[in-house]
Image (cartoon, one colour):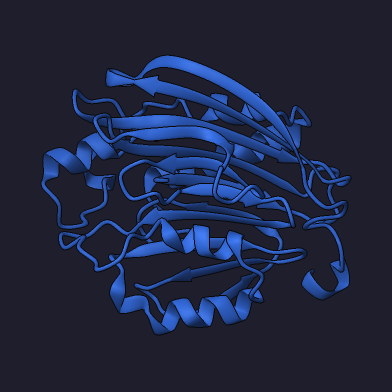
Amino acid sequence: MCLIALNWNPDHQYPLIMASNRDEFYARPTSKAEYWEDHHNIFGGRDQRASGTWLAVGTQGRMAAITNFRELDASGERTRGELITNFLAGDIPTVEYLQRVHNNRHLYAGFNLLLADSNALWYYSNRQDVIRQLEPGLYGLSNGLLNTPWPKVRRLKKKLRKVIDSGNITPQSCIDLLHDEKRPPDDEIPDTGVDPVWERMLAPCFIRSPNYGTRNSTGLVLERDGKLHWHEQFYTIGGEPSGFFKKTIAMPEGWLARNIAKTA
């Protein structure tokens, strides 16, 4: 996962609204979102090379998403995708789980991890080393730290805010935001140390190139009764659409909308 905008508001009709793009090499094999054979309570896509994932939910009342932190040295002893699998497959309290992740942070290349449990949203990056319980609000995340104001992060957050304010909140309206291919001026493009040609190619919300680009766009909308509406658009080489699916997942009633007084 390389770009996320999400709004968490426990008081809202839709407590969680998310728009996200996953960018990857087209040649890297990937399974589309489904219930996993080895963990029947987990729903999400899966990387066939390392068996990890970038975005998934556990039907017992958990969600996790991860983005890579962009840097020249992206090596690690363990795959970052397992951080999601281990959280969703287990029942360790979130703070304890994140503490374990923190203790083993040196085993992974740079990452940003978003975790949701029954009533709270959490963020941790092994490039910042601070476990944060997030207040309700609108957040943006790409391959820097949370809310780092890269142009595409700012654009997607602004567009998602307009959707929320308009009242036209659907998974498809979230996906539509993710098709934005506007490239910012060179003086606004972040300098993360990679080749400038790559920096320009990676700068838009939606990425196209012969070998690397946006592989799927996901729109998630959660209702207060626990119905999580998951829509996903897939793309093949060059960003050409290659399929679409939608699924409604039964999460616990009141998930991310309960115990408001403790999280507001």
